[in-house]
Every structure is written in structure tokens, then in C-alpha cells.
Length: 473
Image 1 (cartoon, one colour):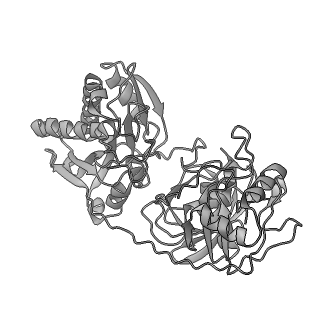
Image 2 (cartoon, rainbow, N blue to C red):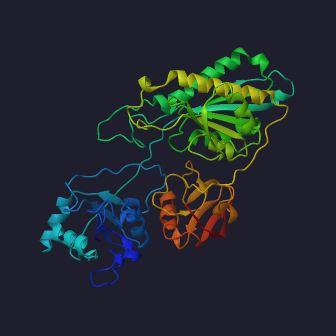
Image 3 (tube, rainbow, N blue to C red):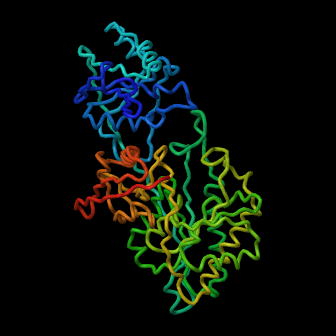
């Protein structure tokens, strides 16, 4: 099937033969080359968005193919067996997919009088598909995915407040304690060497800050009227799983949470620049931050949104005011080189002291801070790749069923205006069935900003059809 790409806007379709006739792929196993006809021009590759294996798999599944054999074409580089890796999606692809050495396919082609190298070269030069059916060739594929369950936990500490009434209100201070281990997934390290990812900044810096604040509040607990809950979250790197679990738990329901302060990557303060997310989630934050920062003189960048790529986001979905402290990204992010010698210790001390002061300022307030839903600024989830439209959904990465479950829709976003709510499971977007987040991404890619999409969701086991006018990223 050539590259397994169907791109009508470029008059290119590997699901047609060279004469433009449709090929029935139902029940057939497809041989698909990696990359695309535009791979030789990386600076102007019109086909780039179609290159991911997930996208090609979706197209094959829609055509009811029996399976896919991926190979690296002769024009695309060395015949190396590519690894299939976990990509943070619990659901399977919907059909068996394997990686194969090119040599095996070349021999089959040769026996049928075909030259794979010439076929690929012709496709690349003409940007025209040249797919066909090998009627006298048979393949048998059997695959199985065995999830490996790993136990993790949230570590919780609680200090009861000293005031008989205010102790029933709880300030949460959190940081995630997990990282990438040997970089099984999520690593940005180059090469195939197995290396430990210590995560000094991400997020030993946050958990160290959490322990220091816990110690200080414990030593001064008689001065705190409200109770304080300390949480070191597990499985943040796998999709905020620890914090998502907590806010769905009975334990969460038992606490009257006033606000949540989160620390993730606070160990690389540079030029005194501190980024704080969630500043718009309560009307009290700006005054509190400005007052306290007069003692620290941080160059603060305020981001009003409560959603974001760390555990504060889980609390924001439950209408809790949040602040998230972050000293900035760097070249060692998600790499083995994120080690302790690169931590700005003095800078981290300043940030931790400030978080403590904010917690104390919260404790001194006469009433709980109000909660504000922040109108979205138009940024989609960071995994959306080349998709140009904006919807505003927040995926629930802990969900393991079929479809894409959301924890909520950003305030004022197309999803919010279209009626999507927390716990909705998207099962169809436009004319595409949605089995997982990648199906959702590629279905979005069929639309342009300003167009209306019909979206089907499961809401309490009932199908609900929504009309969403898509925004622009």
C-alpha cells in the first residue's frame, strides 16, 4: 500500500491503484512503508502530518484491513528493525501491527517480478500512488499486548489546624515524586543506551521543597489555623494519574479543600525568573503574590489558566483555586543529564520560602479564596501535533476504555460552548470513530478553524450528539 497515506488535498491516495481505482483492503494485510513521498525534503514536506504510524493505522482500520506490516523502504535508509513502543495510550490499535525487515518483503516482491526500490523511487518522484494486490502471497500475523501493571502510590501527610472551626478547611501542597526511570517512555535522550533518568529538577526539586515546607509547618503548626495536606503524587509522568486518582477518591470528598499549591521543576531558577500558573483561578492570588513577592523580587510571569501539564490541573477540574510554581524548562528536560549538580540550590530555597509564605497568607485569610473559571487562551493539549484547530478538551489519561474520556473543557473554548462536560467520552468526531486520543487528533485534522464538527459523546452511557464550531490554534 505504498506509504499508507490518503491525502486528498495533494491528489494522493495509497488506497487507490496507479489508475485511480479503489483497492478493497477489507480482510487484507497491508505492507506499508514508513515516512512519506516528501521525506527527501524535510523543510517542505507536505505529507509530514500523515507520517506517524498511528495515523496510517487509523486509515487501515477504517478500511477494515486485517493487519499492517511496516517496513523501511529502500530509499529511506538502513534496513533496521524498528521498535514498537508504548505511547501513553491504554487502548490497542484495533488491528495487529508488526515491524518487519525489508529484506523479507523484497524477496517476496522479487519472486513476483517486482522491484521494491524502483516502486518507492517512482512514488517519490511522481508523488503518485502505485499500490496493488499480491494475490499469490500470504501472511499470517499474531500479536498480543500484555499490559504490565506497576504499583505506585500517593504519599500523604496531614497537619490539623489549631482553630476549632477553620481546621475544617484544608490547604493542599503538592509535588510529584515519579520520573522516567530508565526512560521507557517520555525520554528525550538520543541513542538506545539504557540510562537512568534521575530527574533532579523534574521533580526531585519539587518533592524536596514539599518536605521542607512540611517540616517548617510542622514546627509552627500552632500558628496555622487551617489544616494542611501534603501530597507527593505518583504517576504524574504517565498522565497526572496520581492526582487524578486522588480527586476522584472518597478521601478527596472528606476534605474541604480551600486551595492547592503545586511545585514541579523549581530547581533551575535563572535570572530570577519564576513562572506561576493559575493566577486567574481566584481573585485573591494577584494581590497575595504581589505583596509576598515584594520580599523576594522575582521576575514573575503570571499565567492565569488553571489547566496545565502538572498535578494542579486535577484540582482545578474540581473547582479548586490553584497555583503552580515552575522555574522554567531547559535542555536537560526528560533526559539523563537532569542531575543534581545543575540545581540552583539558592534559587530553590527562595522559591520554597515563597510558597511557604503564600500558604501562611492563605491561612490568615478570613474566608476561603473564591474560585474563578479562567476563559481559555486557545492552547490545545501539547500532544496535538500538526492539528490546526482548537477544541479545548482536557483528556483523562487514566481512562482505559474505548473512546477518549475528558476531565473537562476549558472555559470559553469551543468544547465548552458546544456543551461538552467532564466525564464525557468522545466516540465519534466528524465521520471518524474515536477509539483513543490519537483517533481524536487525526479526526480533528480533517477540519479547518471555523468549521462545525458533529461530535458524539457517551454521557452516563447515553449517546449525545453535539455541534462544535472549531477554533484556531
